[in-house]
Length: 634
Image 1: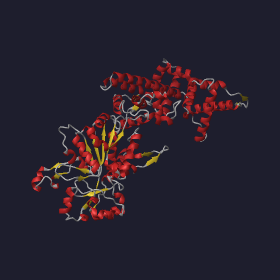
Image 2: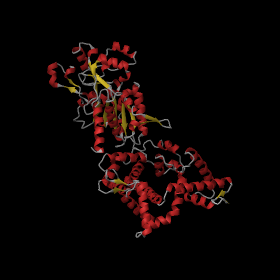
Image 3: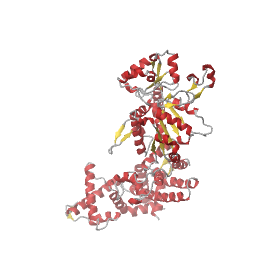
Image 4: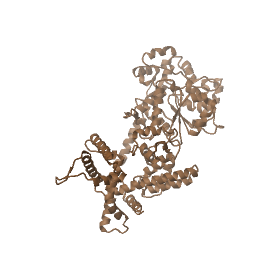
């Protein structure tokens, strides 16, 4: 047996163990003993969802926020919507009025609304298989009813002494079963453990709107079983009712409403009753109690239409909304693409460095708005949002920029469009895919997109040009760094030399050279570095003071070694200084169409470095050198 098959069989065995969870069966009397011993078994739908999320662990962030690891592998760049979601869930789990509301997620297509719903549903299914997430129901109930709902009102205060609060009521059907089958002996009613399952319609429901003319309310609330009416004598007899609507089967768990605001208003009124009163109302039939986490989502256009309808004011009041815009962080956008690509069969295709980053920049820039009030370009805004240093601004200002526009991220290119264009390139059969190929595919796709009018197309073409300029910098930097035996060591030496000189300059002292001679600070070296970033003669002293202060602090924070990358302008200056020193060698080597033996050796070393240290293959490295050669030749 190979290692691969062994790994598969190990995983399969673990899956079977989880799937074959031992399902307990017993009486309500035995179950009550279990709940008294372990009150955490008594959970509402919202409490169970919260506990499921918290069971995956969390981390307290320096800014006071909490990162819940349940979302780590699936939800990227939606931190603020997730914060709002968790705030809602925690409030609802306390049993407050918030639990009697519909949670509505709204935003552009492919922003993560459906993904959150799917993640919660799959999470609840897995959680119900664990000891911590074990859930029990009355064995005879078609709606997975909580066994404790059979406890008479008069006896419930006794259980409250043990910290067990009961809010629910038996359905008319189970009331009849209790009366006729068990002669009122609620303690003898059978109880069983069950597993949440959307496939088996067990405590997870999903409702998708269709043609309003054809869609029947019974899809939500069940219907009369006409074949049994003759047997039981009346349509109002609970035994003549089919409890198979999505709201019925979602009892005790989560109910997802896909594009909720597209449904006929009669469906929304049913939701209104369920949200506010926790009851399902059907014609000629008593109220049916249900405890459900009602999660809906909609696009922004339908949401605005919904808000404009005055006749829907009651539903407005009973709906909590969370805006879910597109992700605005390049690194998180890359993670979205990586996740989607991993799901496809592109294992044999090498994606060259910066390819997904360039696609992500194009997507994020299409969603950002210019902050002209702050003199912040869209490119620099993108970098700040991505946690990168930008001269003249601080990362602490990001919150201010994000609050400038209420609708930032509600428009632009969707991840779905981007991944479609990337996939088109990946499917070509090439050994490697480069940023240029993907950017070209993104540009070509605009012509084919009916939603992109002339004005949008011109804006996106401008954005594409900006992304190409950013890529040109990245491409040149990779090639330039590959020409150094050890780039980081060389730039560290240059930094140390620069810091020694500016410290001596500021202190009015001299520097000792390798021979022990005292020399004046090297003004030529200092100005050569500073002029790379347009530091004027009059501004050099204040710049040197700032650099020395920041690098001393950086050294203190990093175990004695200053990190030049913590200062964007210094990083740019030092890299340009090193690159300029090698510029002629790089240009001659890369641009030489007929390299001699020595140049060929150097190119092979550079290609080897690009492969070993920068993540290229031989094919993509050679394509990079060819592209940079064209840049240097311009």
